[in-house]
Image 1: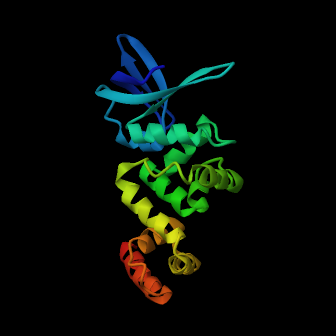
Image 2 (image 1 turned 90 degrees about the vertical axis):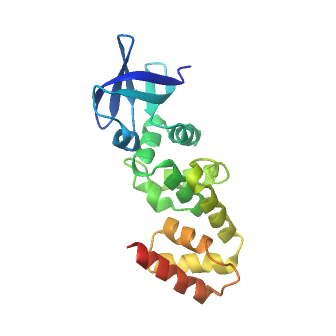
Length: 200
């Protein structure tokens, strides 16, 4: 119904922002991801929005860019994930990172969101695995690499070894997904260790 709100940012809080348009202040619930990108109060801002209508409330959710809005819309299609849980997830994972976490089955990263338990995080991965590839353009090639890992038993084993060594599943799958799949498991693990250690 309301696709975007463009006006002067009059208030920015960790959970909401107020954008004044034509003398009317629109309160938009926001994620930490959007908060980090907002200009200072008194400057013009454009937020893409989603209007959530319930029996007892009409809430407007605002996003700094379209990819975050699209990720939000996908998240609220997951059973048990409402707008607040979706915002909590987007506060800890930007769209690119969420797309990678879902593609790699990284339940732990999704669980970092406030109020999101293991079962909910597992449902997010299960229900969005085939839908997240187009979200967060910068991650699309990375997601393709991760998806190729799933169809290669050696690559999958290399990811599990790296996770067992204490590395993040998303990071491990991303690194292994970028490697030549003709390598042996040991070679993938060695190359993965080198790349992941360099990121620390």
